[in-house]
Structure formats: C-alpha cells, structure tokens
Length: 194
Image (cartoon, rainbow, N blue to C red; front, side, top):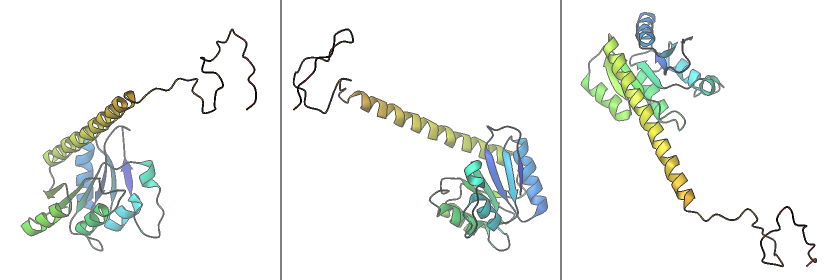
C-alpha cells in the first residue's frame, strides 16, 4: 500500500487494481492531475484501508479522508462490483464516489455498476481526460456540499434570530421584587429567605 502526496489540500483517491502495470498507470494519471493517491492491489485491501474489513481494526480512514475510490472490475477474490456494493451498503462510506474501470465494454455490466451506485465506468486504458473529468465532477460535488452546508447554517442563524432573547439577568428563582437587577455601583439589597 503506497500513499503519494505533495499537498495536503489535494483530493485523495484510493485506487484499487490487481495489475501492477494498471496500478502504476492510474497512479501516474492521478498524480499528474494533483490527486493524493493511495494504491492497493485488491478489494479486501481496500476494505482494510477503509476500515470495513471484518476482524481488522484500521485507523487509516480516520486519519485520511478519501474523496474517490477508483477500482478495476475484474480482480481475483473480490471483484470491483462486489467492492462497490460493500461501500454503498456502508453507512459511513456510501457517500464516497466509486468509479469502475474495465477493459471490457459490456453494456449489461456497465448498467449494473451504474444502477448499484457507481459514479462512472471507465474503459481501460484510462486517459488523462477521464481523470480530469472525474476531478471536475468531484470538485463540483464538494463545492455543492459546502454551499448546502453554508445555506443550512445561514437558515439556522436566521431561525435563531427569530427566537426571543431572554435578558442576561433572567433567573429561574422566584424574585421578590420585579425591579431590574442592581447596577454594580449600588449595594445589593439582602432579600428575606422564602
């Protein structure tokens, strides 16, 4: 498992492929596009990295947010489609976009991946233009999320402004007199015990 980084504000991609050559190609394309890249060689290693693998405690995901998962479809053990389904069924990871890569242009496979929640399906060899398009899509999604959050915060602030403001001297105790609290210059009158 390798993590390549040069800037902490980069988008982080988890790339999953059993082929060493294909991993190097996708890693290079992602680095050229200024992504932070972590590469793993199987679906089970990806789940381990993300902290979803059963019987394994992983702290990687807590330390490093993943903005995109790009995975090969045909891998031994766990296919990219099975990895996609596990991620989309996870309450903590389902919002992460998953892109499937394959050298096979099989329409039913493409449709099945997209129906299961894949963000995109790329034919290998993946090109720089594919990676650039993915980055633009992720940035739009991230910015839309930030705008929605800011809009929600602004609405909450406006709602808060409509609430009645209680004076700072408000007390839950029964006050004998209804006069305003004494100023700091005046001595505080002693009240009889109730």
